[in-house]
Image 1 (tube, rainbow, N blue to C red):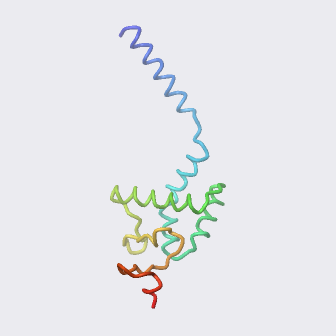
Image 2: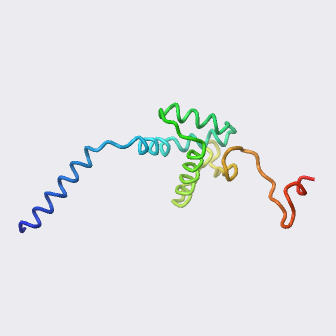
Image 3: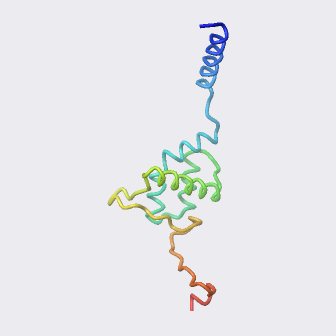
Length: 125
């Protein structure tokens, strides 16, 4: 082993030690807590718990102040990630895949799709 290789190995070793000592940022801690709590969050959302209550509980537990928009983005990202890996959110009781409430995740009511060429008001009549 020449001097250049030894110097490179020493630098890599120092980097590993520094990174091992580094503490995760608040954001990283929140993201980890979200991933860890995700199955239970989905379970409560699927049971009809208002999203604002789920978010309030999450914020209280993690001592954070995540806004609804960010929480929805985190939900969508985690849902997509788990679905891509083949692990979609499932009901703990029956095992069926939980469906996303609707695009903004703020309510669990299904929305009637519009027919092409009509307005929402015309569909409601």
